Image (cartoon, rainbow, N blue to C red; front, side):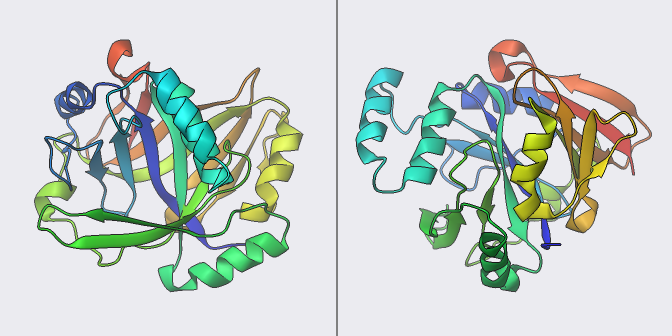
Length: 262
């Protein structure tokens, strides 16, 4: 089995600052790694190395139709990644996508090659970079499947910027991601799509869902449904609670987060 873990989950927010405030009300510590005045994303870091990314996919204030037209023209440059970005623009708010990390990070090239040999249609690496608040340039690369409903893969950041104790400490006790639930139509077809990533699935007795246990104790659950949707994020918490958090629909379109005591 390929050694992969959930790296981060992307949650679309058209009004980023308002959504950040909502997550802070729910007891999460939210961090900006770029200038908050111009940032298009904010991050919720966990102790297991995973994180949630609240993001506004629109690079500029312009009508969606104009941005989509420009992206369509650019699609031949990086078809897989730009098709995914078009999906971000068109999608509703809430859980939109997720990325996988290589475990350990230095095995990224070997694991990526193994996945392609197993039949995964994954793009060439796309080099990415951003300028941190301290002025340093941080780089990484992404490899995206042709099917934008499948997770993309991401290398480690260079330089790595360790999280502070404050960034990792959440008033609600959140420690890390332990499960992501994805609703899919045609479960067997989706199991075939996921096989090059994770190998064989473990099926439930009723045949209505299956799961993959990844590194770091992370779990991906595929659940039979009428349409595709990344439905639920399950987090471990240090606090003795078992509840469901749901932000206001206008901020996160009904994002569901479940908390479970570690």
